[in-house]
Amino acid sequence: MNRLVPLMSDLGVEAEWRIIHGTHDFFNVTKKFHNALQGEEINFSQHKRSAYTRTNKRFLSYSDIDHDVVVVHDPQPLPLLRYVKKRQP
Image (cartoon, rainbow, N blue to C red; front, side, top):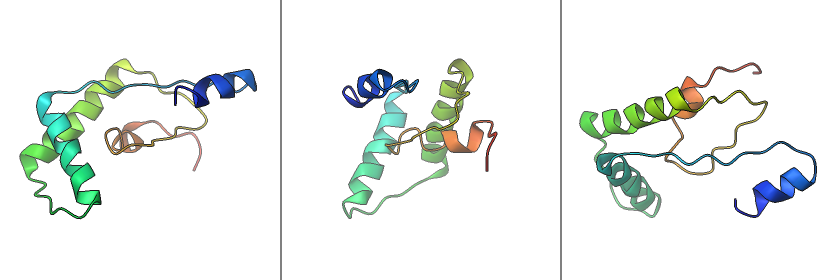
């Protein structure tokens, strides 16, 4: 991302890289996602789900995401797709 965003800007494409800030619980959950993608079983309890979605909702509350395209390249901000106002299908 630290190379792609400047490259896109050089090409005339407005691009931003946003970093999500979360709690210890949030990052523990997303670490479990990473491990699950490598084959480990995951217990996605209601408490974990809540920590995960709450952090994403909070992130969206201070991040005005009003773009034509949003690329989510990591599981941490994946729920943002549910909460971002969509203008296109």
